[in-house]
Image (cartoon, rainbow, N blue to C red; front, side):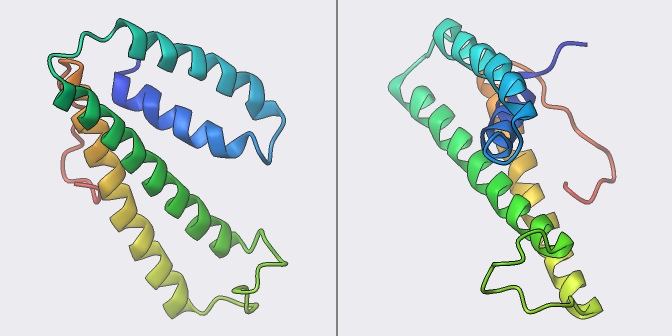
Length: 132
């Protein structure tokens, strides 16, 4: 199944981070990097604003994915040497972080939809989903 452009850029931003911690992600990143470069090269930009909008949406994806990554890692307590790691996560703190993840995911879904529209696609819309 073919992926919409928003999904390709989303996976690319995630793999860009993941490859720093997981060598297996490097080859997958290279594949997506080639796909992103092909999309950027083939895209016919209607205006300078359209090109700027695409870059801004890519940055929004990177930011949202980085924040989600950090929050999820903190819930799993992956980074034991993190000075913000205070040990056990209370249920209230777990809930606060989960809500923050949901809010960042809304921004991520919005950025993906905007990228899809720039490429003339109909964005993937999940009905009655928390990210909407």
